[in-house]
View (tube, rainbow, N blue to C red):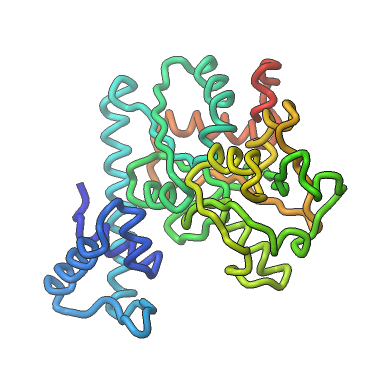
Amino acid sequence: MADRRLQVFLTVARLLSFTRAAEVLHMTQPAVTFQVRQLEEQLDTRLFDRNHNRVTLTDAGRLVQRYAERIFDTYSELEAALRELKGADGGALVIGASTTVAEYMLPALLGTFRRAHPDIGIRLRVGNTENVVVMVEEGSVDLGIVEAPVSHRSLQVQPCLVDQLRLIVPPEHELAGRETVHVADFIERPFICREEGSGTREVIMEYLGRAGYDRNSLRGCMELGSPEAIKGAVVAGMGVSVLSEAVVAKELALGELVALPLSPPLERPISLVHARQKFRVPTLEVLMQFLSGYCTGQRAPAPAQETRQD
């Protein structure tokens, strides 16, 4: 419903990268550049400066960004109000979740919610953390659940859980017997990581920085697009990786992988992300109340076969 040129501009403005914006929007980079150029021609002003492969907003660009965020907030309020007007049949909630959350944490949780609220429909859209944040900003999902820190003025972020990450190695690996491992123990080893934009990748890179290493220090970082692919590569002896404990629960139980605590510990928040809009449909309020209770431990225990995924 919103102006596509403004959507494209706002994505570039937030990421300060035409390449990353193209990936998030599932467009080609020339198409992104074309949309921004059209907007600049319409407004008769330059919105970005491009110097030495670095993209920055001009003063006009920062002004347009502020107004664009307000415009999309209003669109989100309008769409939410229309969904509520249509009633439950036409107003299913749409949740955006990062890959790790969607595959390993949400199934049992949403199953419990649906049993408690069978009249509320839910649709799930999956992407990496960056994709989910953009979906929330654009209003294409009502709520995002992500596993990386988020800081956007137009979004409200509510920490939910703390996820523990571990170094993952095969049982026969020389590090498998350690009680804990440090960055120096694996920084020179072949490493398998998620793609750019992944919340898991971002928290690992920040962890390296806090340990005094450059983001590009990992040797021969093989990029794979899903936790399942990463686990398979580690089991096959292609390298080591860092993943959530929840992701490797099955492989640990089967003895296919070993999860080693990192020193210092590596933790990340699982957060609920939604627009800072004045109007929220009652069904979203019900879901938010349920999730808040889950996050603070005030929910009823899940059935035994489901608790391992929580």
